[in-house]
Image 1: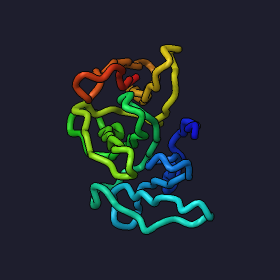
Image 2 (image 1 turned 90 degrees about the vertical axis):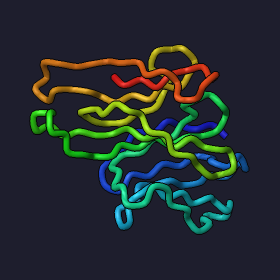
Image 3 (image 1 turned 90 degrees about the horizontal axis):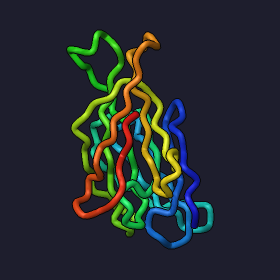
Image 4 (image 1 turned 120 degrees about the horizontal axis):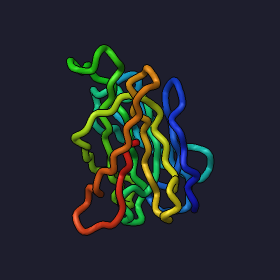
Length: 164
């Protein structure tokens, strides 16, 4: 089943994709009650199995899904707001990536670089036939925009995660 890349929405961000390879759409959403990312596998009849929550207590505000490391499994990328002492009062975020295992479960990976700006988006933005993960980094005055390529997080895997 093909994945339509998603852009983060306001409110409780949610994405759908086939996380376990059974051809049925599943849901993942940022959990505004207990924090974390909750994944509910679809049953194929319009209902969903009980959810599994990852990284509870962390209140993410955006989520996108895609195969970010090229292993054939759907991954999740989320942004976490945080207070940055040296950021001039601008909103700051940390990018976390949960790598899919192919069975509907995920392993958390964290990028070491914070970013300023929104949104998260997934798609092949440079025509390289590989999925890119994009964030907009700005100084909020409109005079500065930064683009940085972060190497793939999985050793031996091709591809990259783009922070732009």
